[in-house]
Length: 120
Length: 107
Image (tube, rainbow over all chains, first blue to last red; front, side, top):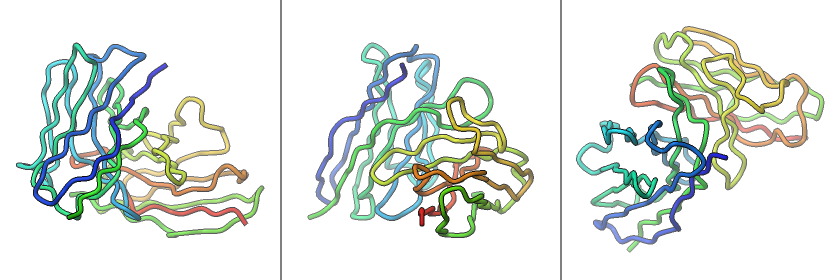
């Protein structure tokens, strides 16, 4: 069965960088894209960007442009989210999620979430 | 960016009730609208995609409708496990925005 397993919680200081991983199993990794969505405490979900696991192509929300990098390692079947210059407002649960093949975007499988806390 | 609003922001209903919630988009998104349920401390779960297509494995008491700018999610007979926050999400154009959610409590 499809599974997305994320790395553990992180505590970061303002100005630092974070890197969260998302290990996929149960399907052909390179056939799908992985998206990242975050949720600050008590807030709505916020889409950040995606990586095409096949060719590595990426697309980011303008809100995070310049601070975010999404990559993948096909041999490890793992996608990564890196966010730099962290601020307290980046404290959130970060989710990876898989989009189905085809032209319609929705998120059918989700990782368990990774809590990143930014605090001095 | 396309803005989504949801109403009501919260509701409390009894088991067996029919529950309806609404999502409104700031522009025409045709039928590129998805619905998710999120229980406390858990990842969202896809319920409906493309406005009205029920995701595999989701109980048939859930249904979605609408097109253009107004969409609804209906739970025909509320069950105890249906508590949580329901989010709509548009996939018409990036960034793929989510609504603020409707919180459903069981009386």
